[in-house]
Length: 107
Image (tube, rainbow, N blue to C red; front, side, top):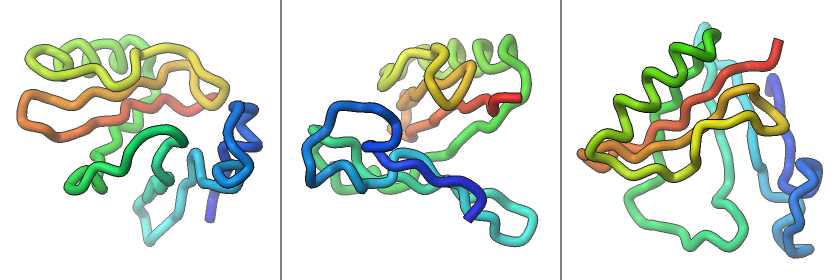
């Protein structure tokens, strides 16, 4: 495991049962990074939405371009903005029902 933080460690106000759920993690498998998270506290588990395609990007401007293109005809799940773990993070479900987290690593 390269990185892991729980909802409790992230400083979010969550129930005691949700404190140990994984908010963000990265597993290294060969030359690939696998991002693994638990369901957000308070969000109902949705059958069929277990896999997201994460766009990991180094450029904030390019992150905005992907975000704008994916949200056209789609639905914004999380607006692209700076959060505690990323200078540019957002999540969009595109017009075909595929969810794309867009993630820029902190340098």
